[in-house]
Length: 144
Image 1: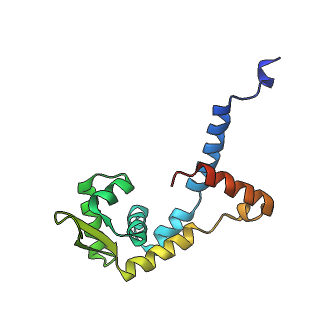
Image 2: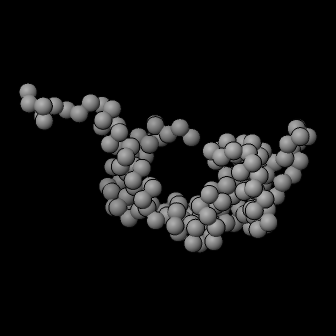
Image 3: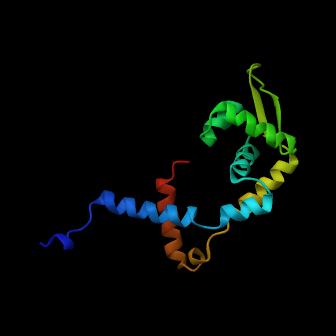
């Protein structure tokens, strides 16, 4: 059997599928739309979206964003100055603070979620059966 007709190893196919998914998500203009609509960096919008879902300690927020704690403190300071989040005492750990979204922060998080949740036109043109299959596959491999 010629080398060019051999099927690709499973890992290569998985890698190619992952790259296509990453390109679809990362190359899309949604992040730019969030930045322009909310008037803040995507990283700040991401932080507001996280605490809008549920209050988090500073260390939880830092870990969920993949940043170190001093950077999380600086980030929360700037969001607090804009009236998007507030700190409050942790109910069970008096050394920690919880960060929660204000009404304004929750409103901005909903706006970002709306923008990010709008599928690209090509996805909407897929056959309903194909969309259902894609959804089931993504649910099976989802880690969150």
